[in-house]
Length: 148
Image (cartoon, rainbow, N blue to C red):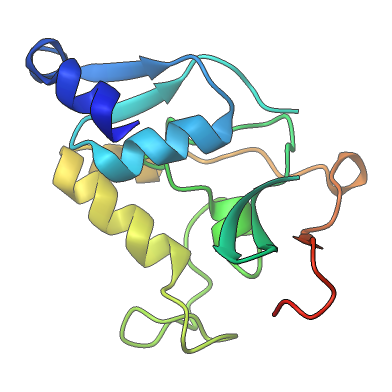
């Protein structure tokens, strides 16, 4: 991904936004490595990232209602312990999650990302309530039994 971004950097510099034709994992990967607004062209229906050898944390629930284009490429459904889609819960403390103080608040990350992109107006758009009947629960996948 980094090599592709370097190869296309001059053309990407001219763009207002990047249309990413990949799953949510691809959109978030580009969002983390680019200073441009990313717009998902596909809607992902366990996609995870490796956190240690054989351990994967889910970064996309494949909920079918992707809002990465409104949140700067950061998914509130998987990044927020409460899965809130319309802003923070009010329990954030110094930018940290009230449930896990070692974890950055997803909505603080989203706010900072949108501010960097000049897109804070996106936070004013209300998202429809989530239909939890359609969504699988967040998961982890471990290849080796002793992996943590």
